[in-house]
Image 1: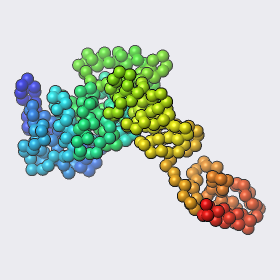
Image 2: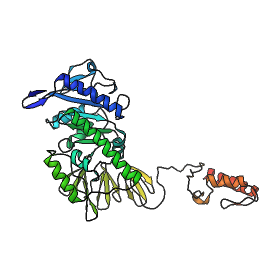
Image 3: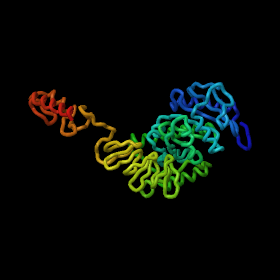
Image 4: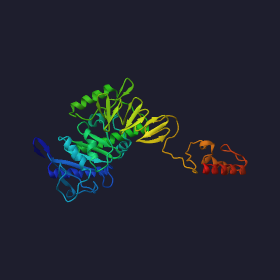
Length: 385
């Protein structure tokens, strides 16, 4: 360790050794596939060691690592740094106290990033104490300036962030703390996935219980992390754990939204904004229902369940196009009827195969020849439609 201007930094040797160790751990845990992910560690006020582009994190050697300054200039190393080093540099620029950054694509956390859902449910004491809530940064094209711009608002208030449709990013006062936070993000996401989508039951902590945990967290010297929603009198109270509040408006993923909820969307006067897109209807996860229709990331989809919400009605959703002359798909559990009274594929084939005298599985002529004629008539009718 070295002390420079009152700050302790790892030596070059210590930093490179730790980066290789964490890279192997990331790879062994399945947090990265192929050449995914990147790691960086500060060794001075203006210098870092980081991982190269195009190399598996499980098979790196010290001579592959790259030394850079915080302006992005390569100081040492034969390989190029990752194009995603821009977000690492932005973290250090936003918060000079931070010593390390880790980025990976852990499967469960990445699922939440893809769904646009923050990790903010008050169901796990360890998450509230040591990790806090993990917001979702707005979508940004990898390798562009959009990425550092998207994560900048979160660096001084949280311990990590989900990158929309991408992965997870964590930081810390030490390279191992940054990695432990990455592990905690994936563990928290796994618990949320199991309880919310497999068991189907989550017992949220009360606001009083959350307040006590936050006090303990403060006494531990952890000042960032956000505040999760809590149960107040049997009602889930949103306290903007994953967003920033300005006046009476709520900002989520960089978009200013009106209202009080602050998961991945916010309801305002019957309208919901998700990822900067205003949708009509009610607040619901990653989409919103509007008059029997559901809008998802700007695309209009028909009918109900959509992602994590249920739209108006009880019918199936999906981006379905009606094509002339094409028999609509009949799913398990469908009634066997096509729109307009036509026979579905399952019902039509079953009745045709049954033959005269066999029990009918749906409405239609009992006589085989009449049944065939009826099918031909309807198919011709669809082709002419």
